[in-house]
Length: 530
Ligand code: HEM
Image (cartoon, rainbow, N blue to C red; front, top):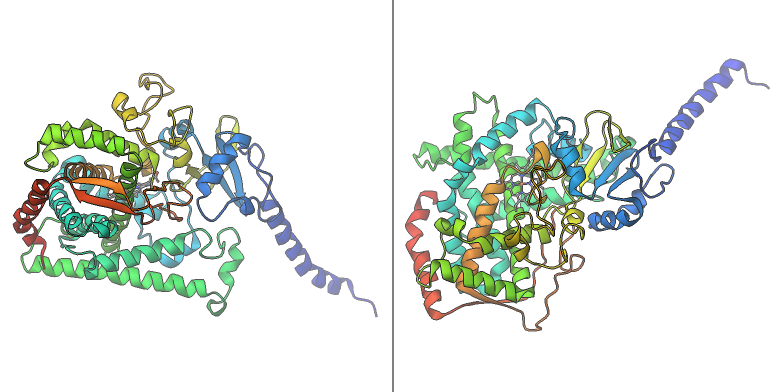
């Protein structure tokens, strides 16, 4: 029996479709013509096997030896470009910001966990992002942020007291500090203890969120969209994503409810959420969007600042001679009868240099936060198709030997000699170097971190108070591991793992002053208590 032509066509059609889809995926792993150079690709998967799950920024930095400072990769069908030099970041993110400021839309992040355009950090470049960014910028501009200095100062005073009382708990004291500053400034609430329910709830929500967004935590749905069709019973990651969404939303809405209740009781602190609620109608923001915008400030500002402070402590025991210089400066400026305050910030150039150097030496978002290109572009003879995802590899930029002398060493002096910390002073009039950034740790272009001023105020205050109040030394074994591979966590934000450190008040007199300053600041906290 022979098959009719119609039957043959019917049979062949699905085969042809499958073949076409397979061929598309086969080709999808290939680098587009004139794409920036990179390692050879494999059919279907491109360079997936060459991109490690943990600390990919180190691998991207090493690739530079073979492929140069702009590297093109394929992650399945996705085009990925890594920028290993500040020059490319300046040329693309800063100078062509109108087309390099979107974010990749990921199924797990922007459809399952944060749908409805609720998450500022993840939003594509469009009207919702512009609206939210404008609100955030109005809250985080220099004048408004500097009004938070009393909160930052009071919380830093408490942190010094905690370091006196319980030096072994330093890791949690630092993390409490950054969360408490944001809780007070965003929600008008007090985070008096690390184990306070709202501090813990925020850390839990944040941990869940970063865990699920980590590369490899869920299947590569964006590279292989057919995975979206797998039913939930066979895809536990979908159930997980829904749980993260449920918990995060419930927490952020609860915090809004609590703030409204406090305001109704006349407990106004002019917190950010209060200001957002006042303008809710004008800004056309529903409760969920307001709740997430406040929550985003919490997520973006807490861990990042804490990690930087922990890196500072690590650097200070690895490089004790630098810590001695920091102590000498605060002693000279503040004397021995009081600890540094926010009024001293501008008079502490070496402490500021320690801050700039910490941000350079161990940038928290070491691999950068992805930007997405919104139209085809050409750059230095390379073709970059619309939809390409770009990473400014902050680690490689900050460790560039051509720019920084002994980049692996913690050397604050480089920022005392020259505001950019570079080997050769930056000529800000030259086209090549105009608008160069002191640090690429806060990103670049239109998405650059709007919270820099707030973060830096916290960093400098705590660094100065620590140098004034304490002697630091390595733990009993005397060894300090500051290796990025072994001493730091993996993940989107890198943090020092807990390390042995001895923290002792410099004298009984200073210890007594720290305790007295803590007692004196108690009345200030009252307006943030329930
Ligand atoms: C040491 C502390 C901090 C570091 C290292 C840091 C770093 C960054 C980086 C790398 C980005 C992405 C920039 C880009 O895409 O090019 C970012 C975005 C952001 N940061 Fe920060 N940040 C810090 C503190 C803060 C603080 C204290 C706040 C506010 C409370 C904040 C709020 C934000 C927000 C809202 C965004 C999203 C901006 C957008 O997508 O348009 N950050 N930050």
